[in-house]
Image (cartoon, rainbow, N blue to C red; front, side, top):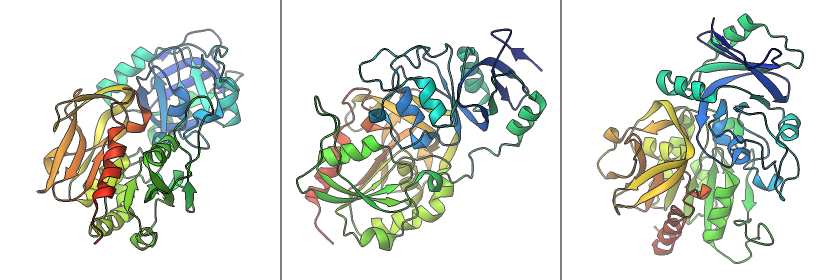
Amino acid sequence: MPAHAPSAHPTACLTLADGTVFYGHGFGATGETVAELCFNTAMTGYQEIMTDPSYAGQIITFTFPHVGNVGTTEEDDEATNPAAAGMIVKWDPTEPSNWRASSDLREWLMSRGRIGIGGLDTRRLTRAIRQQGAPHVALAHNPEGNFDIEALVAKARAFSGLEGLDLAKDVSCTQSYQWDEMRWAWPDGFPKRTTPGHKVVALDFGAKRNILRCLASAGCDVTVLPANATAEEVLAHAPEGVFLSNGPGDPAATGEYAVPMIQEVLARNIPVFGICLGHQMLALALGARTVKMNHGHHGANHPVKDLETGKVEITSMNHGFAVDSQSLPEGVVETHVSLFDGSNCGIRMVDRPVFSVQYHPEASPGPQDSYYLFERFVDAMNARVPA
């Protein structure tokens, strides 16, 4: 069993299902957690990444070494609690140096029950993930350095993985609510929407707060409904548009209950806009297929080409499943592709105001390359002739 130890007294370890063990320095919460391992190439936004509900069931390896240096602030949370099971970094978090910080990363993780491990060879881990696919792992933090390695490897091997797993129900809201907070603006932070707008129902499969802020800023009165909302519940709000949010897990599993709802909404000629998991489930509702990727796309530097304009957008991505572009039915066209691997990143219907993208336009790594998608959604509602 190969092992990689950075010091004589490790307080945390990462065990892979193949028996590989990495030792490091634990921080945050103590205990154990089991999940799928992925890597994220973003240079900023570690707090937003950890609280992105799309990371449920995953432990994140951060390829950028300076994690923790700006501390944490409640304003940057994308959800109430972190969805990611744990984090792996090359260098131990440093003291925060940022005027917005209200606490440091160690305290933040501990208060939220999430484990961190530092001192690992994140390049080695990233190469392993790229070559072998996203492995199943167990992460443990024990200040005394006591680990039952055989038991941890067994737990990693027993993890069922994300295929066939519906995680949207675990991160979705449980009851409907109104959203009126808009995008952050200097110097007052997040303003409230006070003027009337288009009535939009947002299905929460694990929605990030900044997506809802972008909808509000673009001119939408947003009502958020749980992931398992029926078509009748959606249509009862008389929406001018329906938004399908991002989220974790296997789209085919969540689609068992979401796809029939989406198909009935499509039959009403209502504008529909989907992001990430919402993009995948829209594709399923239209008759396409989704597939599990080898190691997925996770980062804020992913180039995506708009096939209809020829423009290239720098995008933020977080997905382990993808739409199979070869399975798109007649009447549905591919609009965006990844310039990393050619995988599908966007679709639209030819004859209806229905479209979706795989990436996260609200994250703005471009920084504003993709905000036009929210404006396109509003334009579709402006142009809609009620059925």
